[in-house]
Length: 301
Image (cartoon, one colour):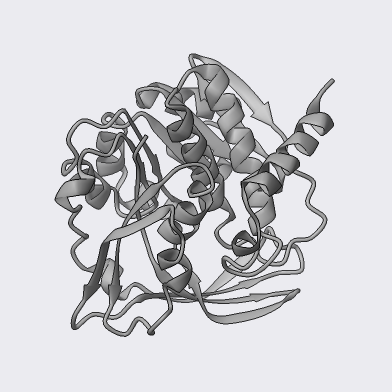
C-alpha cells in the first residue's frame, strides 16, 4: 500500500563520544523514508533551500523504494540545519544550534499524484502545519503523527485538535507525561490512546516502547545494542519501520501493530550503529529480519 511521509530534511552536525559528522544528511522525513523503504515504497514530501549541496540527497534519490516527487527546492530559502552534541551517556544530548530556515516558512504542497496515499506519517513539525497537510489528502486509511515537547507547551489547543483527526500518535515518555499531566506512564499512554482514533506508541529510548490500543498496554523492551555511534534519527527510523511494516501488511489489528513496533525497534537499533544513513545504506531487509529473529528469541519466555 502507498505510504507517504512529510517532515524535515536537514543538514546536521553531530558530535558524539564515538566521533563527529559535519554537514551530514538528516531530518525526520529522511530517516523515516529510508527505514520504511525496506518494507514498502515511500512517497516523500519535504522542502530544502537553494543552498542544498549538489548530490546531498543522492542516498534518497538512488533508493528505488523512495519517490522524491514531493521534494521542493525553494529558491531564496536556506535548508534546515541542526547541530547537536551527545554526552558520554548518549541518551543525553545538547542542542548547540538550530537554524529553522525553510522550516520556518510555509509548508510544502503535496503533489496531486500523492494525495491518494493510504498510509500517512506526519513527522514532527508544527501541529497547524500537520493539520494543513492532512487536509490535502483524499481518504487515507491510517494517519499517524509525531510531536514534541515544544508543541505540547506552546500549541496545545492545535495539537489536541489534530489528535481528534488522526489514528495514532508517536511520542516519547516525557512528552506523554507532559501532554496528560499524569505521573504514571501507563495512565498517560492510555489517555492519549483515547484522544486519537486507534492507538498511541510511547517511546522510551534504550528501554523500548509501549503500544497502547483498545484500552490495553503492550510493552516491548529495547534491543540491547552493543554499539551506539549516533542515536540521531533513531526515533524516526522506529516510526519508519513500524509504518513501513503496517503499509506492507495493509492491516492495523492489534497483533500486526505489536509486530510493527518490534520491526521499528530493530530497524532503529541498526541505524544508530553509525552516523547519518551510513549503516542503513549497508544493509537490506534480510539484516532486519535476522535481527528481529534474534530479538524475538531474547524476549520469548
